[in-house]
Image: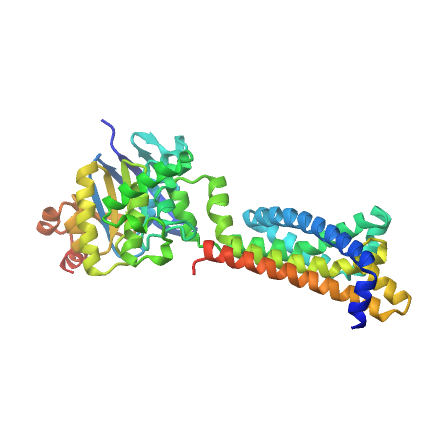
Length: 211
Length: 241
């Protein structure tokens, strides 16, 4: 009840935070999505690069998020830009891995038929491989989105906006309700995005899946 | 006049493993060649050499008088139909989209033209028009196989390569498909190269039958020639089945 009360009383503040959070997350989602899918496509064609690239991304993933933000400050300063970069880097792992896995697991005999029928490299990728890998790619995308939204809460520790600002302020002023309210909004935002994407995943599965 | 397909002294290997050993074969336009032999004898590799999916380690392949090594493989393949066992339809495309796949690679087809082509092809392989909007997973094995053939011939290829296309369908359906394929060849005058492991099918379809063994063409001839003078016990046993 206290949480609902505070959400209502300071709705302007929370709304600003939420919009800022959406903006930062979506920017990072767009960056990581494009970069991740392109990287995934690239390493599915160059198997030798795949191990190295996935290895590097895995290592980055093990750096605690708070210290990654710290590392970035000397280069990109504090604020939203650094937050977006950090979130993008974190978001890469699920999307690169799933794009790669999805693409290399497309039934080789189907690809061979497409090639035998006269599809060129581009037509194979856009017309056959990507659509068949789509359900796996979307599930990686879902992972990425939820992670970026959740992690977005930490971004305020380096001066970026978003709902993390509410959490951070709550912690520094011993206002547990404020912290809880911010966390609740982040969780709800993440769950809602995940639910919407699960719909997309199902639709893609129906259209492109084998079963 | 150019031969439809000419294979000169071709060898192929997967790593250390030699699959084809100096094969020479020339196929006239309009011939119906059936290749038969035990698994691992190199028949699929030989077939894939004709559309460039396998590049010979030695020797050369010419299609319609032009060396594959001198041509744009993608363009050549669009004039060579290709149908395989299990059809291998594209699961994310409808029957209509599968059938129109090859013509659609050249240029984007308007919807009504695509629709018309699909209907014509479906009629040719004796399927009802109303399955055009279905997905492959909604078809039976025989229907899939027919759609696979329709896809292979939709761009009016002059050569059709078929790798055990009727392997996965039941006996009755197979008989029907064989009849239709013969009628189709008569109508279009296509050159067909057809792989099977069923000697009955080979006798029924082939104007010339190639028996392969250990990467070589062991014996070739018409049904009569083979029955009259089998080269050895191996051929005799194969013909007996």
